[in-house]
Length: 303
Picture 1 (cartoon, rainbow, N blue to C red):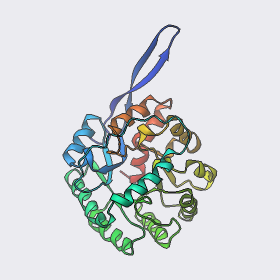
Picture 2: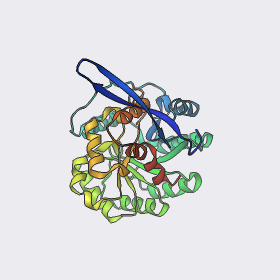
Picture 3: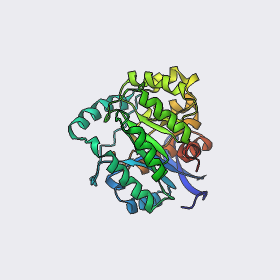
Picture 4: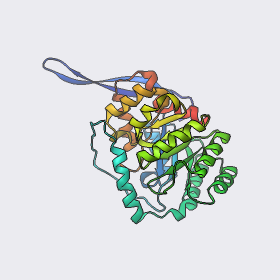
């Protein structure tokens, strides 16, 4: 899809009358859809397949960070619907760290980042790279600088379930400063509330760095400090698995301007399609929907 092209997407409205149930489909125009968080594995392991799926779903662009190398298997997790406002993803992070400690090898991060860069090279107008880093590595800053000069990636990602690092470390301060200087966002998947508490202090020290918090982890803690973290955005991936009332809550507290749509593909069944359908079915305004689905990430990435 060409940048700026308008297309129509369905909004489903459930109606109930005295003896009839029905679902109405309204068609509205959306200027841009960006999948703000996905991985280069499963259905998205092959660049051609990525673009084919984007075209099928009328998605303009996708932000990719690495998945495991040579991993094309499906992750068709059950379509569980969480109706609770509880922080399910915080709980799941404990499981992710346990599994990751058994199966995950962070020594190949550079190779996996290079693989994503090769995909960007094939479709530079559709695929956007976030560099996955290990903040606890002694070479992290030189690695970030060298790859930025070579690749001009669009953002940074760090994941506390796989790489154990303190949000208050000197490296995190240096990374935040680097992102501020380059004007690129810093996406973080947190492991614990303690880490988030330390991060809030970091975010307030770097008000010109845009941070993206993965999966609404720690939302309740962020709400307490909402008046001093105007540079923090909230990723709602994997959208099909997050409770609708939790997504509505973050919109209500922080505003639609601070919400980033993402699929977390391939970790779920048809996450991108189901995520789009979920946002389209929610009782929010068309302006809020457009911001969440793509305009916010477009603004963060200056595209």
